[in-house]
Image (cartoon, rainbow, N blue to C red; front, top):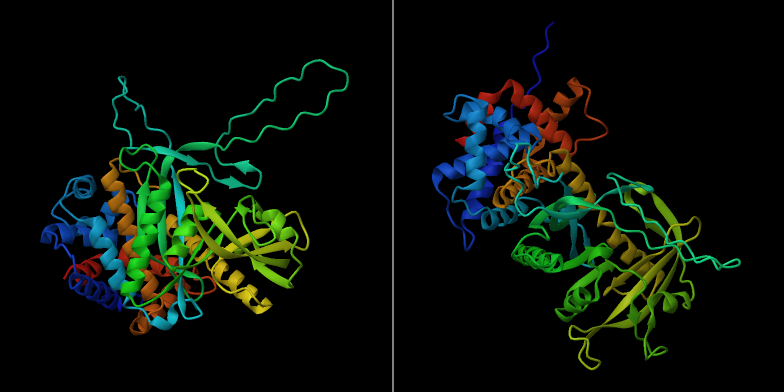
Length: 478
């Protein structure tokens, strides 16, 4: 007996979800309705990213070839490049509104909360790109990537993914048994590329739902500070979350644990749970003139054992130390000109191994061991943004080949919309039959894994699109 081929026969429900999202986004204040043809092209790019899991325009063009008047993949790619680079399309304002409308489609019970507040994670990610200052042409006039700046190289263990510069210690002057010279501080290896700052709400199961993002480069003439970009993204995400009716707890790694941001958030009445470096000066009743946070915490008695969840690296048993202290920030540097804020600090010292302690600055209560465990658990939700990056980078988030700044930004917004749509689809009740069909399709190809994730659902959509291109184009663009 011949088995019927497995297909996503409920693909129209995913398209209907997208249409519903667009209708709701159009009702939001400030919506700028794009040209109808431009909107159609944008929807084609969203579908192309979904089914190809790529940001390469040639690859996306292969998926949407039958949906456009062009007769070749190259011609389609040129059309998409024009849309990303030149077309009048307000991607930076339209996309956040689409993300907010998409967020309204999910069940509020799926939001990860602590003490009735949603967890909002913010984190930058790097896109290393090889330098394009000179092209392969004889005169070196090939177009470089616009405003390409410097980013840190990613490290794996003790090795970096790019070649680092060596540091050579100066030879000591000849003397009888000189004292050993201190080792020079290692230089941070960098390469060319872009920084992208993302912020979004954490869902149950530590899943990331994006609400705001912004591209940054230190070579951009108008973006002089990554700190200001991070603050702008955080403010935009908090505003979106308030529109959705949620108060937030801001969670971030120590890259955002600077005193200026901490004081600002406390002054605004925001809750936060952010990792900081312990080498900052704090003020307590025992240290009115200030002392290093590391020294103050070391003098505190242990408050009990807590498990530190480090994501893919597993958990560590730690001893917890807490203290309430004040931090001060001064922009002018004058002694009496400063802003201050009082925070609770939690330090987790690993019981075994050489791992550095975890130090958190938080506005959440830390009076009891249960409170401390709650603060540490809230911080562990930050790993959701890392898993989100992992999925989107599997779709080519950082492998774009477009060169203009606006084209890069529009393409990244498209990935954010496509990812958010599947986050809802993998959880939404009305799409249960589609998910069951995706599981059956992946099982037929023996590529399901342990469970249906956002990445696996995208893989199922890609497999179905290869066999039913016309059906996808019909339901998606009608």
